[in-house]
Length: 408
Ligand SMILES: *Cc1c(COP(=O)(O)O)cnc(C)c1O
Image 1 (tube, protein in one colour):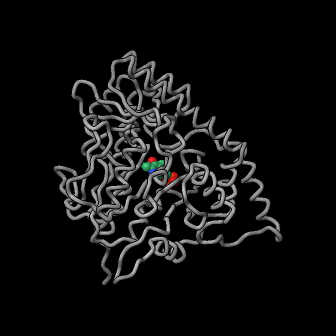
Image 2 (cartoon, protein in one colour):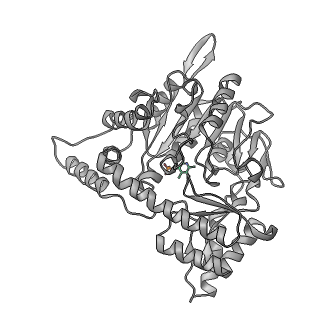
Image 3 (cartoon, protein in one colour):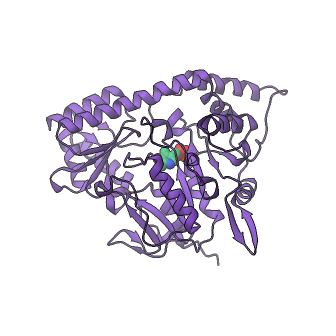
């Protein structure tokens, strides 16, 4: 009789977004006259930029003609896209990453979940708390996290790095030494980030203890301050300790279109039986065996992101969301809330007032302002007492939501 991967049974139910949905539906049914504004989602709302639509149309037409039809894409991505990424995201920032160290994929969620496969199950992971749930859950599925304590909502074999107001939402080097460190800056959910000097400390630490940093830079396009690193490869020594994950979802609205990439420098090696094994080779092998490449059509759209018109159009899109972030942040400050984020990220992280729990504040906001956000406790125990609002709505809804919150 077959047996299952019983690590899946260890996963606590992910009730966050289903509970939110249920509460909103119940509220709406009880108050059909009220319009609910949703500032909870982590999904973009602006349509794809014209330059991307043109690239998609062009690529579709190519697929319809025998001379330009494309079948399976190269496993690791088309050269035209990998070259554009290497130039624009790395060389132009003075970072030494070559096109053949870039692996194109269908998004950063898959890559952030799959990357752990090329590491031993004996490795100990460290994560920020609160955190994007994918990093922890995929390590649970692999059997790397020990046992779950429903009381503390923590895994026995995971090192948690609390990110709260006390440390300005930046993780501190943990007392116990991890093997794999997940970092995401600018951060989802807190909207916080670290300076280049702070990130350099992590790189130095990882090199010293022989750990790998898995760096999620999905929100890089939202950085507005000069001392915030756009890539971990701005740091000295990152080539020997870091893997970077990037996405086209948040900078170019590809959440439904799907495209991302992972960078693994060839200098990232593990010492096995007296030999250096390149993690680049393992991921190339994994990609070649389990993945048949991101679609040609999407990769042409990705290339357009780096065109001169593409850069102008997408900068406008990011500015649109960041203007919403400003409306939210300034509105909340005016209403007397303690707020962070929203400067280098489309997320605003607020302290719930009067010692309310995250869920109490969720209900309070829904009842009194008819606004939906995300309870911080849904992202980890240190998120308790916090609440996330996103700048991904429309400008009109964002303004209306803040008017209601101010009147509350
Ligand atoms: C949205 C997001 C991503 C992007 O995922 P895609 O699969 O590329 O859409 C990655 N990491 C974090 C933390 C995110 O919030």
